[in-house]
Image 1 (cartoon, rainbow, N blue to C red):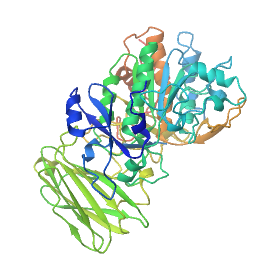
Image 2 (image 1 turned 135 degrees about the horizontal axis):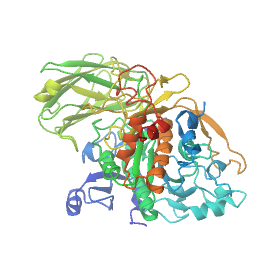
Image 3 (image 1 turned 90 degrees about the vertical axis):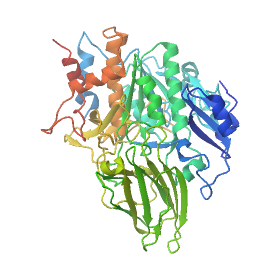
Image 4 (image 1 turned 120 degrees about the vertical axis):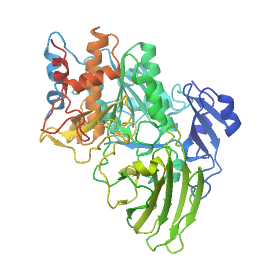
Length: 567
């Protein structure tokens, strides 16, 4: 389906804006005078418009809150240690994920790898939507861009000596291929499941420039992710199959309470029969990207940021509590102060520091785009090396409840920039703060120690996250051949990260959906009921009090989840 927006989707001259319109499409046209519009559902719409902004100019022409957020990758036998192997051996269960779809919104998949083929040589990849421009026109587009390659087309390609000539979709990074192999490869958690992949296109350079994200960073736009999820759910609905969505991507942008646009969109699926969403907690512990002040009581709190050498810049968000306001000032390493930032109303301000040559742009939102909580967005361009101080005071309830500050996820930072006195908690990445999703932390199953960088909960409001912990350290998975892999041999590599833990749990969720819906034992099963099964069966590998900020409710034990169902 081509909605006529393809010329705007790929052009760097056009920005996409993610707008909550709640069925008032005329209001969108009146406000934006768009060149093209793509409707996601009755809440959200994507607006494509030629931009008159540059990072050096008025980046807040339409407001920070309508810019899509930027998401990045979250990076002895797992099948045995999680209990999945035992579930295959019981005659009354025999679970391998058959009849279930596992969907990914990631970097793509290596269609040529034997890890994703049945015994007869045919593929278990039933659909691949590549959003990128270089495949546009090679097959039917979806939502006006990229190309969709069907199971039949992939099987035809596999009969040739070079399947990538017919299916020119390559997983250059390998992240998506790895996660798919852990969750649903022939040696993975659910080797009988069918695989559906959305290969995300990279975020436009203008969006990366606004957020001062390094050019070589893997970065994806929130609107493309939401359309990818829509594609997965539409496909599952058409085939009337249960679906697990595995998300190994995340961001530090947003309120960390589960209220980003992506969070709200996912909420429309997480309560549906036969749909489960599994997401990585993130890998932010140890990188100093979060600061928390519990109470400021009307006094100024000085928050120090250590800026490394040759840092091109960074963005930052400060979140308070409604109905209060945030009074924010910036002090440079040489002592120059940036004040006059709007407090009791939404607005913008900018200052170039004389000695440092650093420009700081600020936008204040007295009510965030979905939460009503006050938010301050700050953008530091060419920050001088040294200690920058953010001086924060609160008025009203915000002063009583304190505030939180987040830098971007560490792979979006240019150098060693970090908070001088960071808080390791409340570092779960979006969409992992969403109530309905299954949020997964990571651990080393060989040592029973938490993965050193595994992000910690809870959410900003204190909701328990993560939900469960799964193997994430030195895990074996398939290496993407990047268009040159042998059609005879499986190439393996090892990786660590909570995205891998999310793939482990996604495979486990597919086994539970097979038992519940495909086999008819729990026909009304939802993602929430799967989460509760996992929580009840979780193993406590140490004497800590559970649930907690690090491990959630404990370690994944699929066999234990079924044991808890026995009388």
